[in-house]
Image (cartoon, one colour):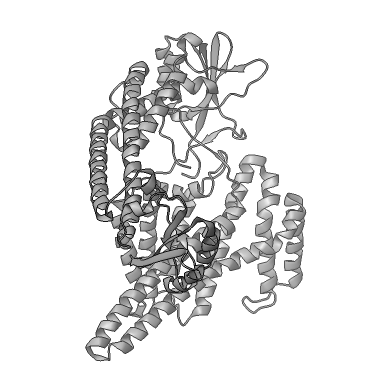
Length: 621
């Protein structure tokens, strides 16, 4: 569990006539991580297989049609049908033409409905003015404007200044002030200037004259409603046809998309190979325990017409993919490594360490039996509903809830109420003891990180570098502790101060030798990182105080009769719900920070290459 799964490098060389069979077999095995070939003078990059372009074109059309029909391709996959690209092209092209036609008809119907509805709204406004539609036809010397205005009374007074050359009508409709003006063409500019200053907004009614509409607005409203209804029926009919098409084709489209995606991946695989005019070369990795089976399967597939070379990997190679090797429940905590960065192949995988300490820190901070039971119930329910990556997180959080319950028992806290004498410490009254515990946990955690870092350096660069880069910090801590003891009565007899100063001086030399000036600058950081674990005390104390305040306020309300009891009960529910919500977020973030910043920086480089076997479902980053 502390190391990624062991990998073997496998190189395959063979004639191009065997390329598809090898690709197909590797795809079915789903264990071979292909290393992309970089073009050199001696070895070119391979070319896609023959039908790659056709498959890509069909896939584009399938996805376009599926998107239009709102088909969830993944949920309808069966994976059983073998899809022929040429046959799929014919079917999809026919379907695409039908979809294009229906799409055009649907857009036409919706456009008509939109335009007719806009006209209907205008005619309904005109109805309020009690004018026939022919009043809005074209005149030789007369013009008109129709729209809405902010203040219709004041505009009437201003229009009187035009000495009868302008007549206006006003009406109210849907909370708006409607205004229609008829005026001599010669004063159009003056009219427009006056009404613009009064907040006039013109409504275009030119379609009345253009289409020669006549009669009462109510008659035209009836006609428009009939037209809208006809286009609505057409729209519904087209949507029903599209729904029928979706119901009939979604299974085929899902299978076709999946199978052709597989074929596309196979067809484009040679782009990752090295190639000559007659041969191909594939380089990659497989888990060592599967290497023999892969070699045997490839030889059987090619009738031993290929050459396969298997090598043990050099841990210092940068291109080795990383496959974490953690059975559940430890594997649930791989979610945190995906969130951060994967370890390099030669590094210790810290997932197991997070499995041990993340719930510990979380429980130490939240530490309440009641809160732990609530969050445990919540995560057990979510576990049945959430799968995939976030499902791993939910499963990981189940263990934090269990830790919360355990620490709640040790702290004797049940929804903020202390039911018996605490087994561990009273968090509210013994803050000094709680602080010492938190910092002590930090010192142990940081030093575990340094020891893991020592092991990593030992594997990577040898004993001497490991001593100077990692063990030197432990020597520094020993010197500081010895110096502190020389000024206290903690042990008797007191050690002499020069002993502590000597060890500190030696450690500083070692740090400089191992990490240079950068190491000297970071000397204060090692102690600030330990003190940073005081947040374990602070976050937990805040939760305790908030719970106590909620309980005290609610307790006071219970003495106020029925209303007080109801209010107090409501306050308890709301207050503790808020505290639990904060308890889910704050301990999570602080525990995560202590691992990523204070702990990982002591030993972890990260930046590992994710193991992505050819043919396997793509894992989200």
